[in-house]
Length: 220
Ligand SMILES: [Zn+2]
Figure 1 (tube, rainbow, N blue to C red):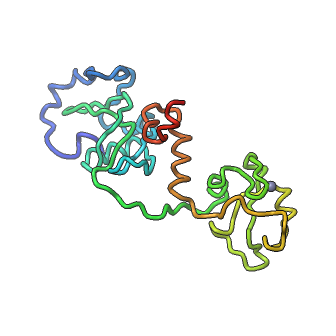
Figure 2 (spheres, protein in one colour; figure 1 turned 45 degrees about the horizontal axis):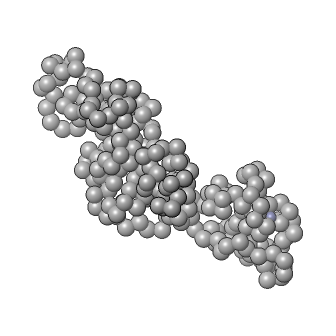
Figure 3 (cartoon, protein in one colour; figure 1 turned 135 degrees about the vertical axis):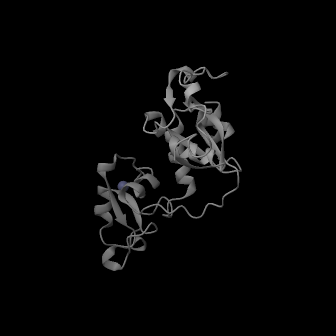
C-alpha cells in the first residue's frame, strides 16, 4: 500500500507539483527529512515504531511503513511523531514513532520461535545455574532434563548455561545434584521478556521512554 494513493482522486496532482515540501507547524525536525509519497523504501520507513495496545501497554515493535498502514487504515493512531513527514499530494503525514491501537487487542501467549538466540535473550545471557553473565558465544544451552533421560527441546526444558556448569551437570537430573539449582523456572518467551527487549531498543528514543519505563525509572 502507498500512502495517499489508495483511494480517491488525483485531480490536484498538477497543481501541487511545486509544493511537495510544506513546513509542518510544531515539528522542529520536520525539515530534516523529506519523504515523498510512494517512496516506501526510504530508511525512515524502516525506523522502528513502538506499538501500544488501546490500554497504552506496549505490545510490539513494527517498522514505520507497517505503522503508517495501520494509521491510514484507522486501526491505530499516532501517539508520538518521529519528526519526519511523508508528503503526498493530498496530505502531509507525520511519520509515527509510537502508535496506539484503537481497539483493545487481547494478546495471546507470545509465540516466538524456539531458538538458541531467543533462549539466550529470555535468560538475558545469564547462566541459569551460576548466574554468570556471558557473551553468547560463551554460553551453551542446557537441557534441564537431559535428552538421554527423555528431556525435550522446549522452552521449559532449555536454559542458558555456561560451559563449566554444563560440564558439571552432565547427564544428571537436578535432584541428583545438591549444589546446582535453577535461577528461575524456564518459561516460554513472555510479554515481560518482549518488553525488556523493547526497552533495550527504545532506550535511545525519548519518545518511547514514558511508555516503556515505570515511573520510578523514568527520572534516570
Ligand atoms: Zn554457570
